[in-house]
Amino acid sequence: MEILISNVISGFGLGMISLVTTVDLGETFGDQFGIVFSISTLISSVAMMLMPLLLDYWLRVYGLSWAVALLGALMWNNVPCGLMLFENYTSIWRCDDPNRRILPNQDLGLPGTSSQANDECPAPNQSPKGRNILLAHPSLTFAILTRLFNSVILFAWAIYLVPFGVSKGYSPSTAVFLSTSGGAGIFVGRTICIFVYHFQLMHSLPINVGGVVASLCMMVAFNIAESFSSLCTLSFVAGALVAYLGSWMQAYTIYVVCKKHFKTAVALSNSITGAGIVAAGIISGLVHDIRGSYNDVFIFLSLSAACQVLCIIPTILLIKSSKCDL
Image 1 (tube, rainbow, N blue to C red):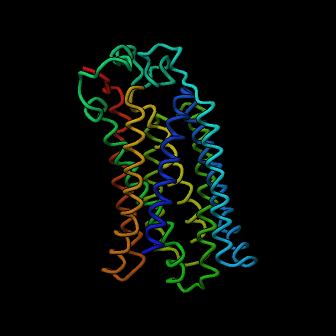
Image 2 (tube, rainbow, N blue to C red; image 1 turned 135 degrees about the vertical axis):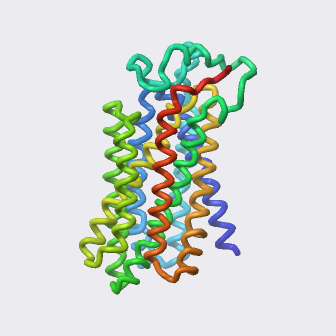
């Protein structure tokens, strides 16, 4: 019970950090948010790859109690970083047109960038008299569902990579390299996301739908491949695709809604991501217990990827119909 409570508390803290920093990046960098946010996720993926090695070293040298204590001490860097963030907080919208939508490509004729849409977004100090956020921005509903399916796929895939390798007949010490390959793929996928936003390709349906379809194929291929090198390759590619789509969707929130609704949209998106993380282990675990095979878990993930395809298409296409106030 103590472990469960501590995990809930730590998860709550990490979720709040993600929420606050995402909002601050959006309001500070504006039209560069996609690039900056993608860089931040890339840095975090490096930390995720290094942390297991660091914890293993601390465990062997200092023991479990001191390893946990050192991890807690390392996490305290969030306190001074948070104070610095608060101290230097600035909003690019304070000296800008209060009616401006947070859409960096307003002059490029991309979805949701028409001047008419900009004119319909009221100033922050005006009381909203139109529809709520989900009705005003229909694309947000599908964006949130995309995040839900992506978090289910990413976390269930990460949880079951090693036991899946063991079920294929490999030792745990060998199967762990499936996770290492996936971590390297995550790093590559988040790197790709930086270039997608840099070259203004974030609204491209072929790129994003193609990525989901490819990840669906990777999940199905896990059931076919037998050699360890093939499984590592599939793990790398799947990690790259799923991580790219996760980073793209997080950064894409700022393009989906107007400035007035941005904070609420980030909160909704992060909450749904948390729900997906919770559901990932429960649902995939039930699939394994009922079916008795890890292969069926990856079939379930491929079905989740198919649902993600159906959510990404309206997420992009419905941006042009988003309005802050009607």
